Length: 127
Picture (cartoon, rainbow, N blue to C red):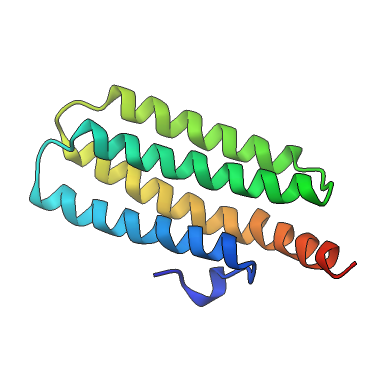
């Protein structure tokens, strides 16, 4: 699912990114077929995001990278997602918009932050 230009070549991160993109694609399909989206599915999406961000934070901490800007981007994104999920009524169109936002956010985030993180991790792992 993950486009080649978004691969960071850190297997753990690429695997999680791929899982997130696949999960988002399944959500898109679900939005068109079912209404409303069950709370446990919305919780699963949020949980995947939190888990992935913790993975990146753990990897950065292991090599003593200043992760504050990257971590701030994660926190802002989670706040937006959380607010939207909490405000969501039974209308899946809101969820579909949120999924589009998350997909777009991830692409930009990977290009801006995760590729740089991967470069630092690769360098640190060589030493």
